[in-house]
Image (cartoon, rainbow, N blue to C red; front, side, top):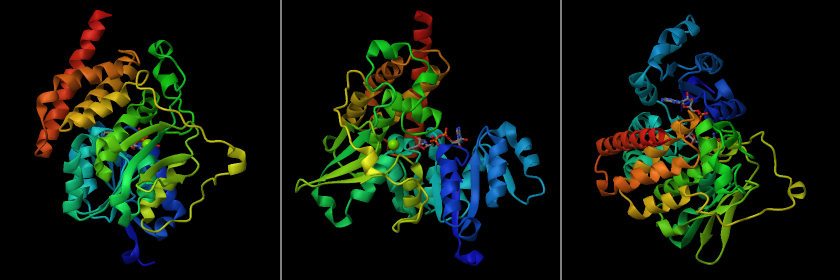
Length: 395
Ligand code: NAD
Ligand code: MG
C-alpha cells in the first residue's frame, strides 16, 4: 500500500514483554508494508530500543530515562530517527499523530502518556492495566472524549471483550476471570513467607515482565484485573468472579442471564490478544500455536483462597469502597513490590502494606480530576514507604 494507506501505530513500552510481542505481531501482519511505526519507547535497555527503532523504521525513539539521551542519540545517529528522553519526550511520543497506541509501559508511569494518547483520539490497546485501576472512570471518560476506542490487551479482558455480544450487554450476569494461581498455587502461607523474588517470578504458563510475574505469584495481578474489569465492562463488583484454572487455556468467561457461559480459549500467548486489539473488529491471521485438545485432555478449576492470597480480598474491599481506593491499592502495591524485589520485605508483607495504606486513606473519596489521582498516588507511595521503613526498623 502507499504511505497514506498505512496504519500509523505507536508502541509505548516497546522494549518490554508486551512491546516485543507487539512488534512481532506487526511484523507478522505485514511489517513496514502495512504499518508506519510513529514512535517506540523504552527505558533502560537502550541497545534494544535502538535496534527496534531501526528495524521498524520508527519516526521517533524515546527513553524514559533522561540520563540515557546521549547513548540513544549515538546509537541512532545517521538513521534519521528522532530521539528523545525523559517525561516530556514520552508525552511527545504519545501525542505524535497515530491511529493506534499500544499502552505497554509497566505501572503508573504509563498513566500520563497513555492519557495523552487517549485525549488526542487514538485507539488505545491497553496492556497497562494500572491506568484503569488508578484513574478508573476518569481514564474511560478521557478515551471516550478523545473519540478513540479502548481495546483491552490483558488476556482475561480480551477474552471477556471477545465473549461480550454488543446487543446482549443487558443480559450479562457475571464476568468470570480465570487465574493460573501462579507458582505458589498450592503453597501454604508459611512456605510463601520466605520466598525470593527469583522464585516468585517463575510463572508456570506465561513469560512476562517482572512486576506482573510477581503479581501472579501474590495474585495482586488478579486483584488489579478485578478492578480493571469493573471499569472496562461497567459491571457491579458482585458481578466479578475469579476462578483458579491452572492450565491458562480458558482466558476468561462471560455468564449470561439464560445460564449460557461464553469463553475464549487459546494457548497462553499474548500475541493473540495483541493481534485482536490491532485488527479489531476483524481477526488477523497469526502464526501462534493452536490448541491441541487431545493433548490437553483436561481443564481444572478451583475456588481462589483469599486467606492465602489476601490481594483478592483487598481488591474486593477497593471495589466496595470505590473512590480512590484502587489508586491507593495500586500505588502502595507498586512500592511494596519494589521493596520485595530489593529484598527489604518478605513476600507476604506486600499485601500487609497495601492493606495498611488502604485503611489509612479510606476517607480520600473520589477523584474529580486527574490531579486528584496523581495526588493520591503520591500520598499512597509516601505512606507505603513509611510502613516499609517501620518494618525494616522492627526487623
Ligand atoms: P515489562 O517490564 O516487560 O516492560 C515494561 C516496559 O515499560 C518496558 O518497555 C520499559 O522500558 C518500560 N518502562 C519501565 N519503567 C518505565 C518508566 N518509569 N517510564 C516509562 N517506561 C517505563 O512489562 P510487561 O510484562 O511487558 O508489562 C507491561 C504492561 O502490560 C503492565 O502493565 C502489565 O501488567 C501488562 N500486561 C502484561 C502481560 C504480559 O504478558 N507481559 C500480560 C497482561 C498485561
Ligand atoms: Mg492478565
